[in-house]
Length: 338
Image (cartoon, rainbow, N blue to C red):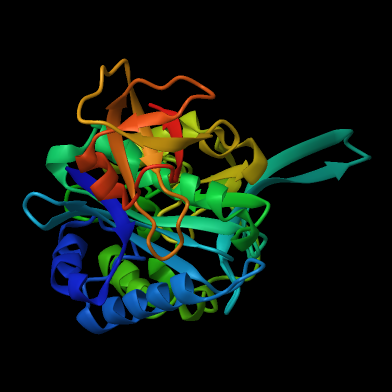
């Protein structure tokens, strides 16, 4: 059985292996033991903290194969993007110029460095074992974060964002980075992303041009990267789009990947998840597949299960499901259909 749970310090060796296997551009999952140790410590402290509002907390989850005691994925929630330092991105909007004498008005798309997305809750760090891509466990890894937000809404903002990894080729080259960022840092895309993961994007953003960058002046290959998703990032995009997330006018600073946005109250798994009481029984006449989670904080657990759910009735779970979720007879449970 696969279960999603909060990360623990003993997960460090396996988590670093996940980092090695993750897609270039997932800067929140650096292949560096000390940086990962810091992330684990920050997450553990966040789960232990008594928070009544969204602040500096980060919640890191791992997907564990209980039978093999092996980590097969990870994902994260940052309560407040830009809490400790500005959360930089590029705003893609039209700049309009006009001439009364010639009776001409013309709009040109322009990219401007900004930190407009400060104070939003941020989803990041999504990575799953290649063998589990496009399975219900990808849904578990991504959407169980949303069930956690539903259970602890006071810890999160009124809007949620996520950055989807932008296009780079098989050799790790990003046409957008080569046309823009590389001129200011003289670093290849992969190295820039690595430094961002190890430190922050602030020192890189501070060296970026502070004036608008007119899109038509970029090479065509770079223009075509704006809002373009890396093929390996498509699943993460699709899952959240089905949740009600939409693209907006913001793109990633390095590879121009799209940013997704949703009002927290409009996210499907938050708005439509149901709660029930657990009834333990040896067997279940399953009629549908669901995401299940307890509403705990430090002891949060989530799984995928085949169930027979009747609204308003106790929810039948097998002893194995109860053990994986750390629940017992009469415990509250949250669920939503896949």
